[in-house]
Length: 204
Ligand SMILES: O=C(O)CCC(=O)C(=O)O
Image (cartoon, rainbow, N blue to C red; front, side, top):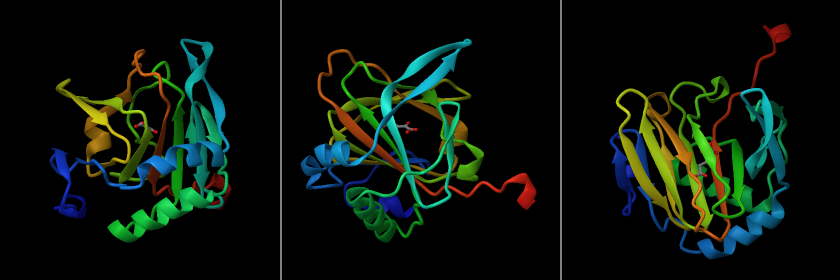
């Protein structure tokens, strides 16, 4: 049984795989603008059927020294922790007894921005990674789709919420943030993870 379900507001979405805690941060409204201004954002590029497109959101990879991460087809070297991100990471490590050492940050400028179907299953995340996903700003729809059965689960990720994906969640499910053209406000999402250092071939 996971420690996450012990939280008084925890809602089990998928047993042993996904837990949602609304109102995890009581002071959530102060975080979105702070994070949006502190973090150094960039616009990634993705290749779809051989054609390059701008990633439909801004992103940043923040991590301990030497922790790289491949996304949007590119190896990203870490930016240093900002004061707010460091505070959040320390708080969550302490509360859940974790060793989170990295944060993939997404800034959805409005409902035109999105994040397509994927699983967080890169080798540097190890087997059955625990991902803590924090939401600040506009409420956005979050969908989970079972890889085998196609079952679809719709959630609304609200300001100040914490979504935790763990166990076999990344093996069994994909997730996405679909476009919602009626959403006019922005949202900052931080997914905190433990990422393992890549061992280069020469290190064996
Ligand atoms: O914005 C979100 O809630 C999801 C982010 C996500 O899927 C990711 O960073 O891999």
